[in-house]
Length: 126
Image (cartoon, rainbow, N blue to C red; front, side, top):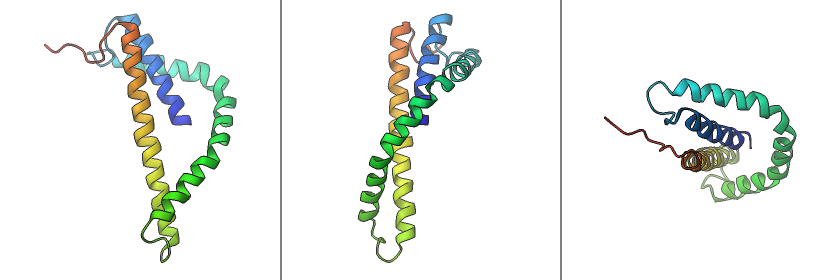
Protein backbone atom coordinates (compact mmCIF):
# COMPACT_ATOMS: atom_id res chain seq x y z
CA UNK A 1 0.00 0.00 0.00
CA UNK A 2 2.81 2.36 0.89
CA UNK A 3 4.57 1.82 -2.43
CA UNK A 4 1.34 2.41 -4.34
CA UNK A 5 0.89 5.67 -2.45
CA UNK A 6 4.47 6.69 -3.25
CA UNK A 7 3.78 5.95 -6.91
CA UNK A 8 0.75 8.23 -6.75
CA UNK A 9 2.83 10.98 -5.12
CA UNK A 10 5.46 10.57 -7.85
CA UNK A 11 2.81 10.83 -10.58
CA UNK A 12 1.28 13.97 -9.07
CA UNK A 13 4.75 15.47 -8.63
CA UNK A 14 5.48 14.67 -12.29
CA UNK A 15 2.36 16.53 -13.37
CA UNK A 16 3.00 19.54 -11.15
CA UNK A 17 6.65 19.76 -12.16
CA UNK A 18 5.80 19.41 -15.86
CA UNK A 19 3.05 22.00 -15.69
CA UNK A 20 5.30 24.49 -13.88
CA UNK A 21 8.34 24.16 -16.13
CA UNK A 22 6.51 23.16 -19.35
CA UNK A 23 9.25 20.52 -19.71
CA UNK A 24 9.39 16.81 -19.00
CA UNK A 25 11.17 16.00 -15.73
CA UNK A 26 13.44 13.77 -17.83
CA UNK A 27 14.68 16.83 -19.75
CA UNK A 28 18.13 18.12 -18.85
CA UNK A 29 18.17 19.92 -15.51
CA UNK A 30 14.56 19.13 -14.58
CA UNK A 31 15.04 16.09 -12.34
CA UNK A 32 15.93 18.08 -9.17
CA UNK A 33 12.67 20.06 -9.45
CA UNK A 34 10.70 16.82 -9.72
CA UNK A 35 12.42 15.39 -6.64
CA UNK A 36 11.77 18.58 -4.64
CA UNK A 37 8.10 18.51 -5.61
CA UNK A 38 7.84 14.82 -4.73
CA UNK A 39 9.49 15.35 -1.34
CA UNK A 40 7.18 18.29 -0.59
CA UNK A 41 4.09 16.23 -1.42
CA UNK A 42 5.31 13.35 0.75
CA UNK A 43 6.05 15.64 3.68
CA UNK A 44 2.81 17.60 3.37
CA UNK A 45 0.34 14.82 2.55
CA UNK A 46 2.02 11.66 3.84
CA UNK A 47 1.12 12.16 7.50
CA UNK A 48 -2.44 13.16 6.59
CA UNK A 49 -2.93 10.00 4.52
CA UNK A 50 -1.31 7.65 7.04
CA UNK A 51 -4.61 6.57 8.68
CA UNK A 52 -6.07 5.72 5.26
CA UNK A 53 -2.87 3.89 4.33
CA UNK A 54 -2.95 1.81 7.50
CA UNK A 55 -6.65 1.06 7.03
CA UNK A 56 -6.07 -0.06 3.45
CA UNK A 57 -3.17 -2.26 4.54
CA UNK A 58 -5.30 -3.86 7.26
CA UNK A 59 -8.14 -4.50 4.81
CA UNK A 60 -5.84 -5.98 2.16
CA UNK A 61 -3.82 -8.20 4.53
CA UNK A 62 -6.26 -11.16 4.46
CA UNK A 63 -6.30 -11.16 0.64
CA UNK A 64 -2.52 -10.97 0.51
CA UNK A 65 -2.20 -13.88 2.95
CA UNK A 66 -4.62 -15.97 0.87
CA UNK A 67 -2.65 -15.14 -2.30
CA UNK A 68 0.64 -16.16 -0.67
CA UNK A 69 -0.96 -19.39 0.61
CA UNK A 70 -2.30 -20.14 -2.90
CA UNK A 71 1.15 -19.55 -4.38
CA UNK A 72 2.73 -21.74 -1.72
CA UNK A 73 0.27 -24.54 -2.51
CA UNK A 74 1.52 -24.49 -6.12
CA UNK A 75 5.19 -24.71 -5.19
CA UNK A 76 6.82 -28.03 -6.09
CA UNK A 77 8.69 -28.22 -2.77
CA UNK A 78 5.70 -27.48 -0.54
CA UNK A 79 5.74 -30.90 1.16
CA UNK A 80 9.47 -31.51 1.50
CA UNK A 81 10.60 -27.91 2.12
CA UNK A 82 7.67 -25.91 3.54
CA UNK A 83 9.82 -23.01 4.77
CA UNK A 84 11.55 -22.64 1.41
CA UNK A 85 8.17 -22.93 -0.30
CA UNK A 86 6.79 -20.13 1.89
CA UNK A 87 9.81 -17.90 1.23
CA UNK A 88 9.48 -18.46 -2.52
CA UNK A 89 5.74 -17.74 -2.40
CA UNK A 90 6.39 -14.50 -0.50
CA UNK A 91 9.09 -13.49 -2.98
CA UNK A 92 6.81 -14.12 -5.95
CA UNK A 93 3.92 -12.22 -4.32
CA UNK A 94 6.21 -9.32 -3.46
CA UNK A 95 7.60 -9.21 -7.00
CA UNK A 96 4.13 -9.26 -8.52
CA UNK A 97 2.71 -6.58 -6.26
CA UNK A 98 5.71 -4.30 -5.99
CA UNK A 99 7.34 -5.03 -9.30
CA UNK A 100 4.34 -5.21 -11.57
CA UNK A 101 1.44 -3.43 -9.88
CA UNK A 102 3.40 -0.49 -8.49
CA UNK A 103 5.43 -0.03 -11.67
CA UNK A 104 2.34 -0.24 -13.89
CA UNK A 105 0.35 2.08 -11.63
CA UNK A 106 3.14 4.63 -11.47
CA UNK A 107 3.73 4.49 -15.23
CA UNK A 108 0.02 4.97 -15.89
CA UNK A 109 -0.08 7.84 -13.39
CA UNK A 110 2.91 9.54 -15.05
CA UNK A 111 1.29 9.14 -18.48
CA UNK A 112 -1.96 10.68 -17.23
CA UNK A 113 -0.12 13.49 -15.41
CA UNK A 114 1.89 14.27 -18.55
CA UNK A 115 -1.26 14.34 -20.67
CA UNK A 116 -3.05 16.63 -18.21
CA UNK A 117 0.01 18.93 -18.05
CA UNK A 118 0.24 18.92 -21.84
CA UNK A 119 3.91 17.95 -21.74
CA UNK A 120 5.18 14.71 -23.30
CA UNK A 121 6.80 12.19 -20.97
CA UNK A 122 9.83 11.85 -23.24
CA UNK A 123 11.49 15.13 -24.21
CA UNK A 124 12.19 15.61 -27.91
CA UNK A 125 15.64 14.42 -28.88
CA UNK A 126 18.12 16.66 -30.59
